[in-house]
Length: 581
Image (cartoon, helix red, strand yellow):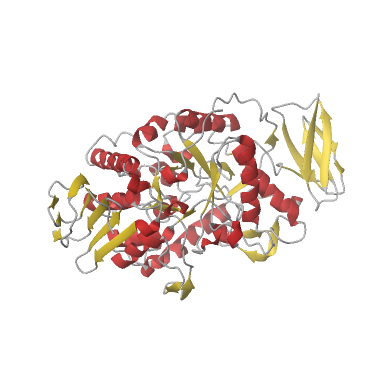
């Protein structure tokens, strides 16, 4: 039996393969692919490439790095896993409730297999899509995963490739679709050997996180192929139902066909072949609807994008925070605009950025935006990783949850949010290089200065305790006040599921009234009215012609006749016999 090894490497003059204690020469074809067929090599062997006498280095397309980013790659059999999900098709985005989780902190064990043991909780909650934070191989034993370097290999600390397939297969057996967060705008600094093989990076620009990817320069065709093949691998070989694309504003590409458009086209073709829907959900800081618009209108036709504007508007109304980028928000008027238009800054001047920002979302559906009150960034990028439950009252938490789950967007919850988890979610790293570890510490302190947090207030990302403290405490959700929060979340998700008006993505059917001085907001979606009192005093909302049925209230003192009576920091969801205006 012979195994073929191949690697694209136009930069070195000589490439050799180390496997089974021997070194073998590779031959190069005209397209700079080096290949060799090795007799006796088998599944489970460890190997690496030697470049001009230096190395061995991991395979850029390694499927397994059992000894981390600096170790040898391992040959695995992608066809061996016994899939049982042939009939699974996930819920459409219009009906989705997404749950974002971090494998390393979701359970005490922090593995793919232990994550699979908690799926019944998500099913009982009403979740339809599980979104995994990045799981590719990164430096150290624990981290967020956004500094991955071996993009084809699941992180060894979470388990094997088959363990990840087991998790996806188990999700599908429970009716849960699975979305994977992937990072194509940069690679991590530790174990990043791609630049030794080929011009994967460009000198034309740098991202906030590191060297920019060469999507449009000389020899970029194979670079684009590397990233597109990676996306297709996760969807095809691991049966993921979609990808969340991290910070696509860091993908600079002047090609006539942008890398995101190419990726979307290839994913559409794969979806046709495998016979199931596959989705792409970008994150972007640009407020640019071209990501979502059809190709016939010059867009990339991606499926939905995260809406930070909705988060910022809701967060600042609930907390009163006005530092850093939150300085652009804080009025109920901002929240009202976000509920109607997704973007607050849609071609308007942003004082924080000191420039006009964004573009109109006209003609786009609410289902093309993901709305949230918490996610890994908005919790973890705080000095102490504190959640909304540590910042506001239970009443305001319930208002926030109600607006997320009753908005016209696709709702997303972050792990533990459903019960108001007391555990923080800190930024944590395990860099083995002292200089890199110190640079990360200092960088975090500089970043947080804009929010008024002093260096001594910032948790040390390298401290093992930062990682341990971030693990969910699964014993607390049955205790006070967590059980009440969990019940509220379940009721809201069930309400969204059984009230068709709450699944309506037509934003023109969203009608908002508010009073900035009295701090109340009324959102009407067809027959459903969501009435919110953010303030410390009771409010009686203006008289209305509708006759209401109370569906859900955060406070037993809510009352209604022709006017809605709201206690302080409360929310009521009502249904009228006739739809609103």
